[in-house]
Image (cartoon, rainbow, N blue to C red; front, side, top):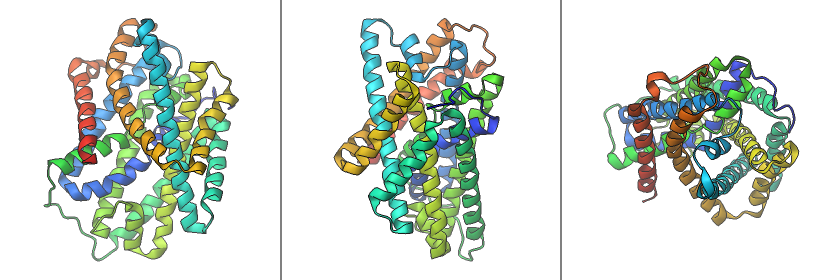
Length: 387
């Protein structure tokens, strides 16, 4: 990679946070929301956003209090995984994070390859190769290139969502059933997916790093970045439920079909852009994690962060992918819960005792307890969803 130390504009930093989150989770929400009901969906959306925002802002303060730009793995290693036993857990955490990231990136490559197959009839391996070079090629040029690419991709996604929404509202059969409500199981399943849709916390260090020229903008970039994800989830879910009636698991294509077969192209474009934005943010985060943990150079870190996902996609280890997906879910919850004691430790021992921004009252025990409870519930929700 090159150019990783260049400044980001506020919108570019915001787009990196949004790009990390706008992925498979967002696409899964409408189906589960249709089973839960509109009113429960709206409540769960706001609760999920609030809990997720608290966690992400904790990371912003942690980065500022350490007064060094590092990835979360190293930050936890410095303040939480201490001593000989702690170092063992740190390496285990690092290995699991790496596996989970590779699994996530592989899913994006395979999913994007399928879209190119449906749109252009390209062989899967050709589509996967094209996507890899487009996605990994941007990351090769570093943080600034990712920020610029994320910015234009998020704008393009917004245009697609707006176009589909306008066309949906013009359908004579468009309607939302505000009365129907699902049970507790449906609500919990929706909550679990919602929390993963907002998961962008490995992108926060990149946003903070890119805004070193004005650190006080970092928390606002996070608030806006996750907020844009919230808006996308809200609009996509309500429009899909209102336009298509019976919402399928592949909601964006189902939504397009309800408008007209030609609109499926817009749906496919949305999926492609969503996967690209996530690939950029996730692979950049993984490259930085590898560079810091193993003291590797930028180029070697980039190769190891991106190439394995392409190889797994080519080989087609579906069982291995399932394992990595499960690992990713476990790590997401584990990392979120570990963030609270990590935050308290950095708050106490961090080098910078007077950072430019803190959470203030929102860093108190009541709000930290809400974060822990929220992510424990996420774990429970995912067990329920698998039943």
